[in-house]
Length: 112
Length: 119
Image (cartoon, rainbow over all chains, first blue to last red; front, side):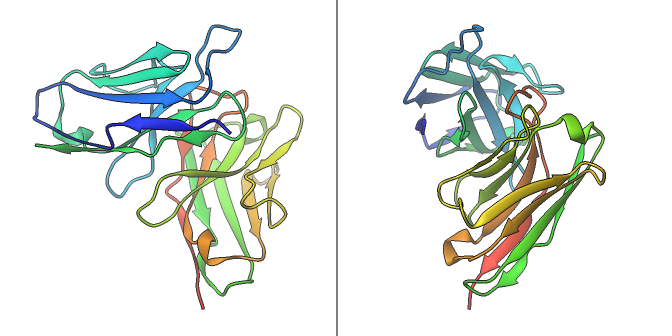
């Protein structure tokens, strides 16, 4: 199975400041189509996860443009350009190139 | 609007069985891959099983293969997870998830149903 490793595991961010989370896959997630099969989710407190980014850099419907994803192959990054209070929660990266889908450990993001 | 409503969770003794259901609406269920994902209390996310529509294939995590069975009734827009020989380590919130296996960019999660395995 693919192993997904996130860093840091926790982050405290001042409102209005940027934040960045890294995700590394044990194997390349680049498909022959040119898409990287890497997704980012946010699980807000008490809620189910919601899709933020798919194919490494595509924002899902309704996701604010302060969220952006980048990377290719085995190294990926999620960036929040300006932290807002509603962005607190646990962020997960997920590989969906091969079954089974596997998740990173999660990065807990709090407001400073 | 996509809606996924799980039910069937509860308290069961080790070795017991439960059947989870997920009622889907707001999309073409028969054309959508569906999954069960679980989250143990205070822990991360673990994929459990999937039902693909491309070739009617089912997939299972090693931890549940042979004990759990995923199935679907497209006439009722409902996904199921039959769980047998339950263990304490199966205790978790079980989410029904639409997407993956050829369906990307529109992944949706239900609110989950809690399964507790304890004597």
